[in-house]
Every structure is written in C-alpha cells, then in structure tokens.
Length: 278
Image 1: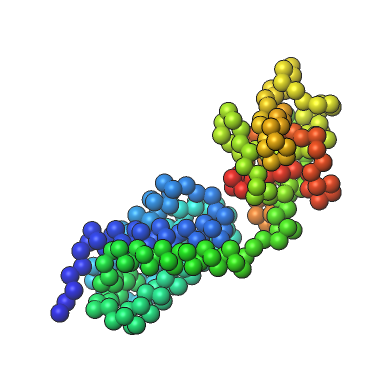
Image 2: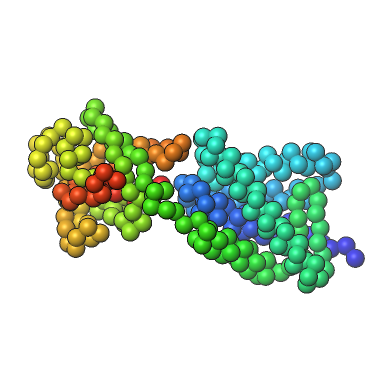
C-alpha cells in the first residue's frame, strides 16, 4: 500500500529537524547567529524537503542540489564570510545530518517502521511528529554531551589575542575568555572587556585613573561582581576591538572597556573577555 505524504507535515517536521541539526553546529564552531536566522534557515530546509514530491532526479543532479541547499542553509544561519569558517560549518552540518539519518535508519530496521522512503536526497519516515521530535532532541542532547565530555578547552585555548582601538591609538593584549564573566554595560546591555589600567592608559593616552567627569573621555561606572563584590569600574567605549584565536578573527564594533587597577594574569593575559562577545 502506498503511503500518503502530506506537504505541510513534511515541511514542519523537516523544519524542526534542520533547526536541531544547526544547533550543534553553532555549539561546536561558536558561530554567531540569532534565533531568527536559525529559524529562517530551518524553514528553508523544510521547504527543500518538498523535493521529495518532485520526479526522481539522477544521482549527480540530486547530489548537486542537496549540496547547494546544504551550503545555502548554513549561509542563511551563520553568514560566515571567511571560506574556512564556512567550510567548517558546512562539513559539520553535513556530518550531523548523516549521523541523524543513520540513527533514523537504525530505528526503522530495529522497530520495523511501516514506511520509509528516500527520493531526490530527501527522506521521509512514517513516525508521528512527537516521536520524531523526541528523537531529534535526543540526538542533539547526545551531540551536546559528547562536545562537553571530549572537547573541553584547555586554559591555553582560552587565551585570545586582542587589539583595541581608540582615537588613533592601538593596544595589543592577551585576553582570557572568562566563562564566569557575565559583566554587561548597564546602559547598552553589551558585553564588557575588562582591561588592566596600564594598558588602558596606553589606549586612551591619559595617565592616571579614569573617573566620571573626565573632560576628554566620556567615562561611566560599571558594576562588576566577578572581581570584587559591589565594585564599580570606570568604563568607556572604544572604537573597535579585534579578537583573534589563531587564524580566526572577530571584529567587535564600539565595545565597552572597563578599567581595573587589579593585576589580572601578569604576562599570561592582561584582559578578560566574555563568550557573549562572540
């Protein structure tokens, strides 16, 4: 007996599946994106699943179409402009897709699902929506656990290069990615870079401690609890910051820079950054 495939159900299920496959790509790569872009990319994946209802393509055309859609989905989701980063995201998304398909195929054979169909690189399983979404969530949870268990960054991996720019001045420092640093600018809500005072002086061109009311540099106070309870740090807005980790580079526009008199890490690092910056 031939199974009826409903287009709306096909689109919905594949949209959910695509969304849950994009999440581990974001987890592994640290690519910057938002819920809106992930949802849009997932919906594109859901629409692409309608190719199953089209006449059967030859293998080469189906492969090219699938590959082009894979790249398009990843680009919509993350908009990576650098080739290496884009390639890494595409390869991870493809790997997770194959992993998911393999798990579903295993379930089909073990539990004897009554209908399983493949056409033009798109797969359809006759499983109710709730069960399919539960399986997707379980796959995502497994990938997330694997990442946490086997891809724990070492302290050396958490040290980044940072260049800060302000009024023609540039200061290069080493910055620690502090996972416990959740300091944000109370005025804009943006994450804060905490910088040692000696480097801040070189950046602003002013010696001595910064304080509100400075005639040349607009300074505000930022409450910080990660360094000392109830402590207020003077802060200003730099023009930009460039954060590097090996070949990877991120530019942060108009970052908030808080200045501390404390010694952070000596020669190891002179600034603290938050993962929220990425």
